Every structure is written in structure tokens, then in C-alpha cells.
Image (cartoon, rainbow, N blue to C red; front, side):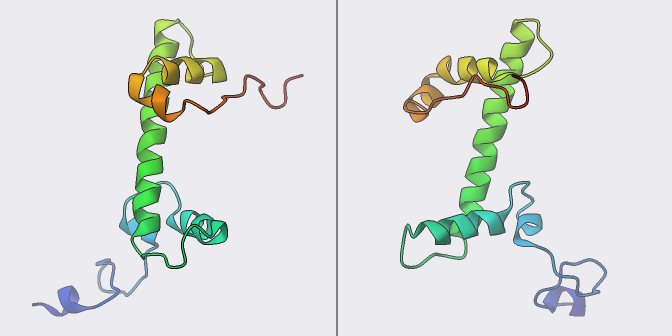
Length: 115
């Protein structure tokens, strides 16, 4: 194995040894560190696997992208250019799986900053 490939902790960025965040290594947008902090703060378990916050951040990112995609389609179908809370609610309730997942969730219709 070459010297570059055998280094531990190297990001492969020219062998300069720059460390990359877990979020960057997993190629996610949602912060793995913040998810881990929330998991630890919530005391959901006595011990936490190192991969648990990475997996949970990926799941949350996927669900968010999916809901926003459906809401964007709802906006397009209604001739609107902006995703509103009403369109998010419609997108969730028109999808059978998301409707059961978010069954007890209330999506606020109040827009912050507008009285």
C-alpha cells in the first residue's frame, strides 16, 4: 500500500493531514456533531455507538429532502413558487407513509415575522 493510502486520519487531500468533520466524511448536510449532542443530552441510552449519530443525521436529511421534494411538487401543482407551511402539510398528508409517520405532528400555519 502506498504511503498516502496507509495514513490514518488523512482525508486524502494531498497528504497534508487535514482532518475532516464526520459530516464531511459522510457527505451530509445535517451536522453529525449536533445530532450526537442531542442524543447525548436526551439520555436515550447509557451508551452511544459512534455510527449512531451519523446514521440518524443521514435519515433526518433524507426525510427532510423527501418532504421538501413533495412540497415543491405541491407548490408547482398549485401554481405557487414558494413552499408554505400549508403546502408542507398537504404534502405530508397526501403521502400514505409520511401521513402515518407524522400522524401526531402539527405543522404550524403561523409564519414567523408576519403579524
